[in-house]
Image (cartoon, rainbow, N blue to C red; front, side, top):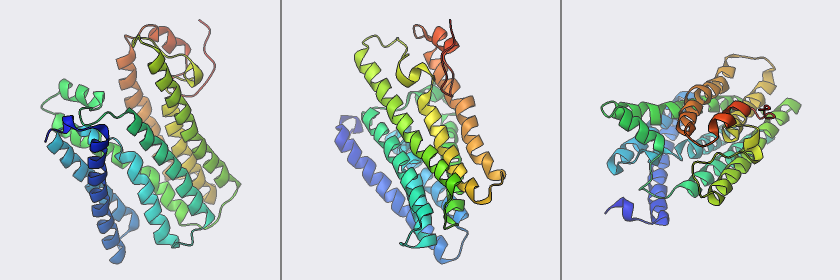
Length: 294
């Protein structure tokens, strides 16, 4: 069977089967760790890495690394849910409910956006193709660590702040502020993605640069939304001790990933677009701000 001949819905069914079996495999590891008293964070990290490895191996079989694309938006919700039920049972406290809510909305929005833009197994992220063309011999290693493992680990360490939240049972005003910031993040991402989709649909010339809506104030408002989501999670965690500790390095690592890797790769691809040089000179890279006068 040629996967390229499948419809989008048929390909989606295969996605569900692969991810369902992978999640079941991860749950077995989590329950075994809980039964034998293993550290929750270590057990979950091992499960997360092994689930990522399963997706990686299946991706090799079907020759499409984009099988991993929805992973880092789907798995965090289940990790948080598992931890919440493990610590508080099914009588969840308000802090757990709010954490599950903000992670659930973020997860749904990001996964939905992936589904809208995904066309089937004929599609593979252009960045993966670029990495393979740039260094074919190194691609198996780049694929395993650069495309799969590093994003998994970077997202997982963000969830350690969620783990800290679930060890508590109360909320305060700082916690609520963090939750509001995290809830605002998917809204920003939804609006920016919708504006980009409308721009692509109404502009036949694919070399044009968007300069409307949120994109007038930030070159990457969707990335900005992603970063403030994790910052909001940290603020929720911070609300209990009100002391800046080493956990602040987790959202910082996400910021560094976007600023020094994701954004430069994206902007290098956009360099030849008409008007992009002037757009780059006048519009803030990440944090929304008024355009500079030309």
